[in-house]
Image 1 (tube, rainbow, N blue to C red):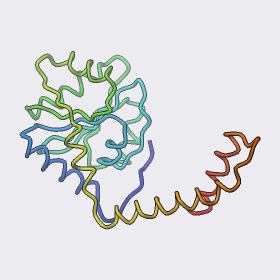
Image 2 (spheres, one colour):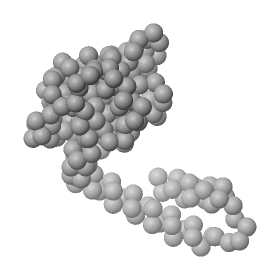
Image 3 (cartoon, rainbow, N blue to C red):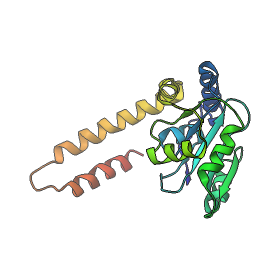
Image 4 (spheres, helix red, strand yellow):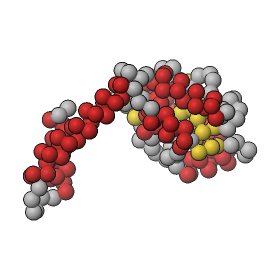
Length: 193
């Protein structure tokens, strides 16, 4: 795991409070996110999705938590000191651990929309009667709202992308491989920071 990009204008705490407000509007008990851009948006932690369950739970009220493999617990504790880290061992069912956290805040829980089907079905199997709602509308509303700092970051990214486009397209010629083109693009982005 690593730290995501921090935008000084909007803290993780503010993003989570916005999410809680949306949960309250919908009457939902919380949200659950597995590693994804939405997970990073709410935690500022970049994780690759693997076959081992890691999930972030944000109840409508109370502290957030993260269920993760035991070997990731120390690093995640350092990256997210405000979260309750719930590590699981190889002999434990991580989905049952996540459900234990979820049922502490009853109600429908929003499931991050890119969560693997495998994870969603195993969560549902661990808690018959648990209602997991499609979290897409919630996340779409959260992600659509941008403050001045986020808008500035988007403008800088768009500008850099056009600069790279303008620098690389004139170098295209017959015989240039995809690999060579990719190196040119990455190099042009590196030059622009």
